[in-house]
Image (cartoon, rainbow, N blue to C red; front, side, top):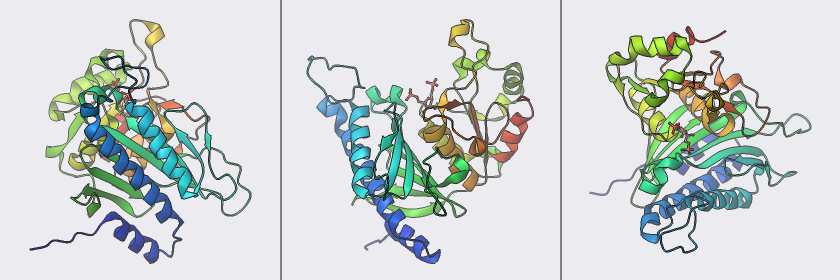
Length: 327
Ligand code: AFP
């Protein structure tokens, strides 16, 4: 018996038609999907080709290897540029904003093509994360960096697991799975579960003594109530929270024994990490705040690689921990 599943492009086409939207976003998403499939392919075969290194590394034979993070960055840039729809992009891999179709483009794209680099040498899951904002259609475009509140979509591919999750503004959050024809199929709405039984806690536990006293106290009082899971790649860790509910956090590091190693501003990057997952989480009924308990979506970026602390997940838990955060 043949089985036909609705694929992402069918899903999006219907969505755009239903909301009387243009086809431009379809062209952009086609570019993002093509990028993800290519990254997935290189990542799956990377161990055999000896190119699971990161930029700056050499293989055991001392040969010129292709670096995974550089490959992924080139792939995404090629497809975004080719789409003709992108004004400019920010990539985790590049210091400067990347100009694309400045006059004719319609979207800003913020992406991390290979997030979770400590997993790369092991071929374990990494993320390709992206956030999309639209140009000012009413007046002149000044190309300022957008806050998560201005995103129209954000998404993540957990590579090489074949899962793709996307949130569309005021239309929810959806998960897809890759099929044998390399299409992402079977849209499943994602809503954070209310039942606490499945909730999980996810954070780098080895940092716990470096967190603010209120956060340490909250952990001590609550950690036994929930299962603890940590992969070290935001996309994978958030994927579990979105399915099971709970709390992911990367708090500010403020009590490090070596003060030079403190990160009061947090570790995660705002525009292509924190705001991307925050946008998805909020569309799935959750919440996301920074170290001051301020919504991640309301932070207006001052520069492309700005960092933030992040508390993300089920509303109740994010509200609870917000209570112990300053101010
Ligand atoms: P890397 O790409 O440098 O490994 O950073 C990944 C990441 O930004 C995010 O994906 C993880 O949630 C977080 O950092 C893990 O950080 P720790 O290694 O400090 O736990």
